[in-house]
Length: 556
Image: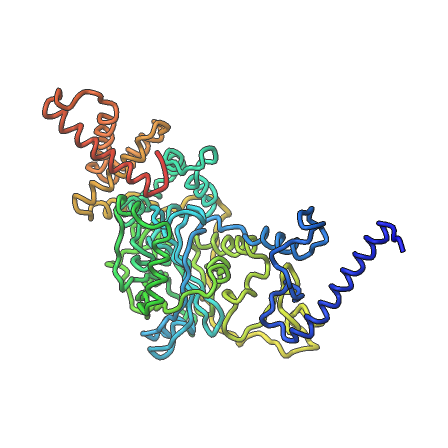
């Protein structure tokens, strides 16, 4: 019989569908266990994963190809927002080993008990300002955040490789970060913007005396010390309160890179170096110390002990040994355990409470809030963030809640307290900080004790002459750009002159030498000895200045 072309086409389509159904039946029979069979995310077996569904072999592609659509949609959503700060980082896991029982000072389970007791930990080291795709050799503060999975819940300490911070009040934080981030016009970090902002806050002098010093570029994550920066309260079983700050001393020692050395390093040298050491059985270790101060003594110092721009002098507030961190395990997934691990200084346990410090109070809110933005409201359900002790999960609904049939999203009584279901109850009462009566007017005021020059002066004067020269050279480089505002420049020269007159003179001398070398076209053979010496010195300064900008990812 003669069959019309349209009918022939329909018959072919029907036959193809029938063959497809038969093939699926045989495939199901052939693969009763799909454990090793490539499937869609819905578990459907895939028999061709490299060719899209098309009209004929040459296309066009059909929108009904759900497998193709799924692959593209998942790929398009594989990235999450990077951290606004601390984007570039490395995470390792290990244990905190308690070596001294501190039950007389705090009731925190983490710090009490027999020497040798271990608590699981995860730590994330990071650069602060630059993006997720930035090199690890850049001059930048390093974050040092530790999550302790205690038997009383998770306890986080967020710190740096420096003992202090740029500012003392968290309301300045957003603008501060904007000044340190790249210029929105050029995409480059530029020092004229940084100096412009911080010229309003001489409290930042101390931080710059660390950042622009030789310790500004660690030679590896494991080759740096750490400080908790903030002041916390330790509360013991009787309710007695002490103020404390944490310090982590690297057993590997502290090693740093000069600018020219840093620019020769691999893009990811620090993470590769630490990862490989752990894999080879060399486990980085830090000794944990704490400084302890009775609250009644906090007014006995020339500075405010709740000022994050001030270091607690060890000679006046000595270090006490607590135990040590040892990191023996690399993450199983860079994304699941490094990108999705989340820290907050507000994550405290019984026996540890926040002080009144302004920066700490601000970060208690900000850190949890930024993680809920990045990871979603249920981010503490993620394995790397979940407590490792028995706990009540109070997450209910929300985006990507995967609590399962035992979660509160599946229970009729998803609230607390309940008379009908009294199985969940509050903990037995335990001491908090003793009652403190406060009476004051609501104000927006600076703290009374600010002395912004004493500690940077002492630090600079502790450097040997070569180290002082390198510090002054880096400062001179940052002030030498064409866009440096003269009013801002003069402000900073007054600041540094107050810190140390010799430092101020070095900055001016180095700037003059670089200016002479960059503008003088005269042949060196035609110069007198003084001019020739100045030219050679200026050229050397320009070479070092160029290395500084490369190693900091910035320009003047």
